[in-house]
Length: 385
Image (cartoon, rainbow, N blue to C red; front, side, top):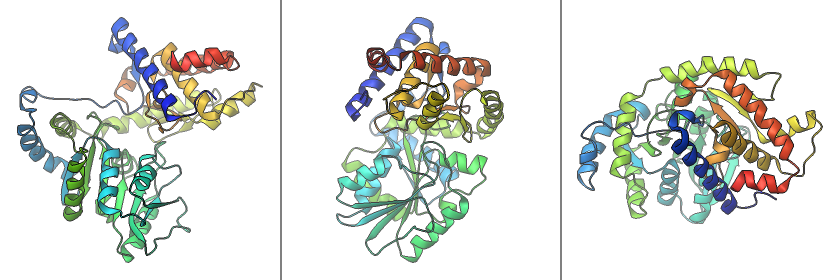
């Protein structure tokens, strides 16, 4: 196996970051195309940096974040965290007791790995559903989690969202929504209400997904629950530090839905151009090529391999980065990240990359993959060198 552990996934990520570092140093940032939809940023203003102190920073920027968080997520109170995963962990630490159960409903498995890992950490039990007819909340259930949009941007139907909340409320179980990208995808493209407006007790979103904020988590919801989670986050150092909070403030001030809506048009043009060339599928704001799609591409051209689908996807992503300077999640993602190659037209860099360049890059990458697929040394060098 080329990739058999989280340690090897981390080595692959480190290799990708070395490539990005060299590319920026040699040719500048403009020759790099981050199409992950997770590029984020720190759109700070003049004078912000002088306020990024241990105590002055939170005093200033957490106050400024209040109305912006309220507008974006609703709820009674908010909490800024250093990652969405930190918010998930802090919530489970605060609300889930050993031996109790967490029930998770999502449009399509698997869940983000931080959810089952956090449940395991506290000694809880974990059940996952993607079929509303099978979804159940039991007497030992202490928390229900809903994923609004999966890692591959599968969106939960509004009817299912409301039904899960209804079932949970009847049992008196709090509902926590992992709306990392869904807080924007669901509301802007699918015209769904905010999670709190549908009755969720808690919601967390990522401030770098489909917006220009830092990689951080913004949580909102029931004030009493937020207080419990906030206490836990401070005990374990999961809270956002002043630079992240300041970045959230400026990103939310700058945020408008227009770029996401424009991305839909470019997505349609790209998808139409790629049909018949690669077995891509549409996402709300882009196209994606799954590991299983890559296997089908191999079969179509009579290419056989002993590699696992996920390994093929990682190889594809690393070739795409090395040869065409296009960043996708399987190249730079943390261990456990989705292996699907997703090209998100809502990414800031998508505004300056030509559709023909993307098409030629994908074709060239698949051809290169076919050439090295049976050469283990070449594959390892592609992933790790």
